Image 1 (tube, rainbow, N blue to C red):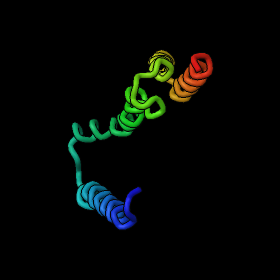
Image 2: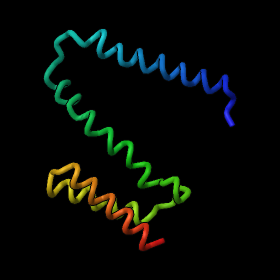
Image 3: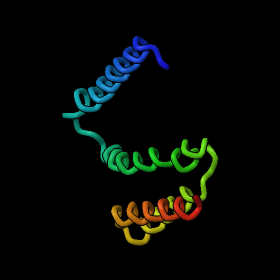
Image 4: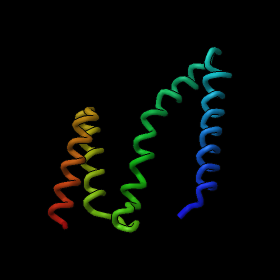
Length: 108
């Protein structure tokens, strides 16, 4: 159990850090012209967030105490394959979810 004062220090620290990080981009750079190469790279930031959030859940799932799980790995492969073939995000997510729950049901 974490101490309440430590918890509030972490929450306030994260809030202040998040504010200054956002202020650096929006407040200081937001109204200035940015080079095209930087805009091209910033366009892919949102696309990179979802795999960054999902990858640890596939490779080191907490549900299995960090051991590689065939159901989660297969769901990730199906999601990636369907996404690459159809270019449909919702179809890929739905196919991955169906694969995950079907394999979790079948494998126990």
